[in-house]
Length: 178
Image (cartoon, rainbow, N blue to C red; front, side, top):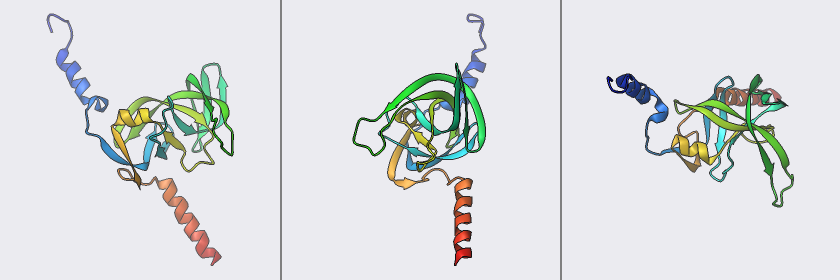
């Protein structure tokens, strides 16, 4: 401490308390799991081991880019953030729907399996026609130490409450029709 003029013990303690610095063995997860995004809440996410894009994808509507500021709606919540990049999404294979679009990228804080991850990059696009509002790329899987078992869903997390409620509502509507 005398040589460096720093409180080394406090710095080591802060480093050790930060869960992002912990080394964990790889965790087997399901292809679909629940994660929480600060300001948005719990959403279910598909972990795509073939997704080598520089950012994960987040369902967003009413996207508005003004300079470096982006506003959008996700899960009924209005959000805003700093645009850190744009990604161009293009498919050249034989798909029913051709894609050639530019998407804004923002950084969001995410909690997965009780661990907080700061500044996770997400490109914003309409995923309302997809099975999950989040598509996670390989970079996040590496960062979180996750290994995907494609035969499992919700292996380490629980199905989000909003999906449970939706199923209950559908079940009750079906009972009323019968």
